[in-house]
Length: 318
Ligand code: GFB
Image (cartoon, rainbow, N blue to C red; front, side, top):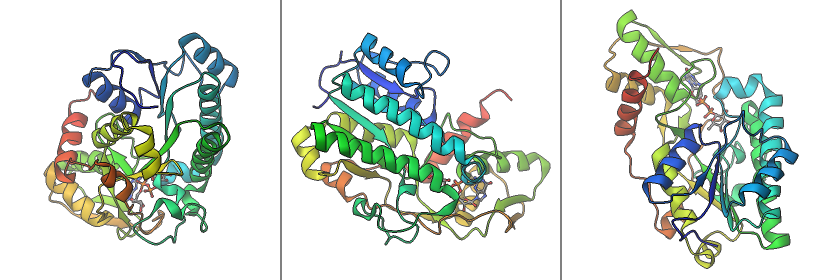
């Protein structure tokens, strides 16, 4: 059932993360005045008993499940248990409790890494489970696939209005900029910003040839609100399997991305490659036809989004 009432109780799970904080901001600025949130120390989302107790007490009507263990290519490859177990535990507890509490609509945040490594590009929702995954992130992808499938199972068995959004690579203010564990875009902002004073060079992981699509998290937050507010028959017509890709519809090589970040940040030194680090999947451009047919498109150009993110990063205390 769609979100209409500005006083509806909306649980944003993971409200301190990159996605959750943007979603909470977007909903608050749009006049929704009853957001329910819990920090990790207040509620361990991996604990099904605690999560059920929380749902019984707060009775949220809508849920945005943005809580997840996330990280860049090396973090994914280094901590397979954390990426598989934590994500399975969080999403299983929250999705199950949401159904038991009669939640009207739940939005689960998946990821485009759920699609097979060699699936035809741009990736359509129908590509799910048609081939082997990219090995560097298969633990995370398997967990996210289970989350998508659990939402589909609740739709099918109980008629639950549970929907999965598959955002492409995200970036924006509030991201993790630790170069050891972050995704590429915040890592590059961190590296180029530092190299302006040190003089460089800046080293890119891998060959620089993989292509990625980057979506500003504020665009994703608008997509989440848009889907929360969409009529259920319209939504079901556009996405009978409850899956919707969210992206910008164009991608860029990692090397060109690095040059763009260098330009925005004002670094004109050398850029080197470290081929000992993994490239990951060669390309993951998503087909966003379902979202555009519904009437949503991304609006933040990459250069502007990088400048906005760099400004936020530069303003943080070190
Ligand atoms: O963003 P990223 O870590 O993750 O890396 P994925 C994207 C590409 O950038 C890879 C290259 O080809 C990296 O080798 N790269 C170049 C760098 N320099 C750097 C650097 O300094 N740091 C990082 N992190 N990368 C993740 C998945 O895949 O994407 C997750 O592991 C999830 O499961 C997420 O799906 C959205 O795009 O390869």
